[in-house]
Length: 224
Image (tube, rainbow, N blue to C red; front, side, top):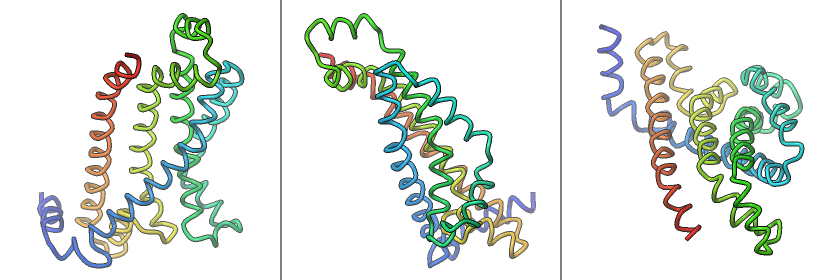
């Protein structure tokens, strides 16, 4: 109970929220890093998944190859990147490691969503004279949107939780609060940092849940 009380005191102290090393600064860094990695991951994974799902070829192989990355610890990838020439490129070792971590759920969910589109609808669109690109953008992608958003949500939450490793490479983010707590032998600060990361992840989860709940209405509107 003493640790919990001290953790609460740390979280409610305004001195810990402001300044160069304050919570708000670290939260902004964490949000920036997560957003950049999520954006890059989407740019890399989604076009591949959508095209392969539309064609119905090579998707299973791509998904299996991407899932191999899940078996490799992100921290191990980060260490290898730091020891490589990329290690001198600022935040890029962390970004590359996190992007590799986020690609599998994006690729898998988008491909499964595309392949799960009702083929009768696809054949009807083809019979109406739609081109492949028109079917992809106006029929298949809207119908696959719920699963695509699920993949984005999973990747975003995982990135929020895993972006704490940036602190180990000298980067910013909420992980710096945790590592600083270890350096100071301050258990309350370590626990406070973990609580902040957990709350941030839950907030991101809630935001994407709301977006996913709205997506069926958007799909029906576009279909209409």
